[in-house]
Image (cartoon, rainbow, N blue to C red):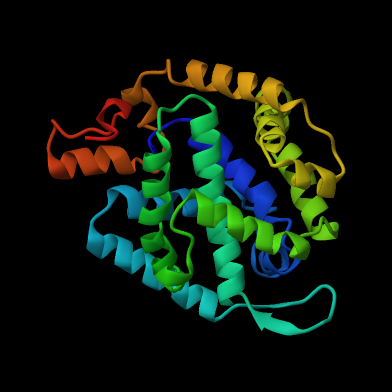
Length: 265
């Protein structure tokens, strides 16, 4: 599933969703240079996901240890109370994890990737491992769709679209770019960002204060985008950085390749 091109749209949805937790997004604002190094931050996230998906166990453990060490040194200030807190608080790590995994699963399935409910549950359960790698107790991480839905219902009262969330929204719609690329940003990137935003749950639209098309319209657009992107040959798509799939194929042999038809085997 992580080899599907709609994962890029899903990643942007995850950022929109994660920004709705005031303490989580404050940690990003105070400890990240994402405004100046958006591509670098995106690649670091993609590199971690790629390593835990396609790398060796040893590489995944090293990546997790590196993230835990970095997080242990970072602190932020609660925007409401002024309290100083560590960005590696379990509640914050769990929010970031769930917003990410839910976004991946939601966008890719809604865009036409074939997963049964049982396979979706298995996907969520498998990501208890990635939760452990960033410092979470796997037993505290949702293990299926029902548990994930219950988690979001529980955390919703804590969510809000404050100044930090709106700063993320503005950034995602118009990230800094070279003047020559501004037309491409308007024609391509903004459409992708708007589609990612539209795929958020209704309560997120209400918090941000920006409407979205009707759910049926969003689903049609997701399916059309997924169909178009999947027409690009996989070998060409896999050339994009960070190239974890190609490295895994080189390590495991040329007959090894991720493909939707293998789902369920």
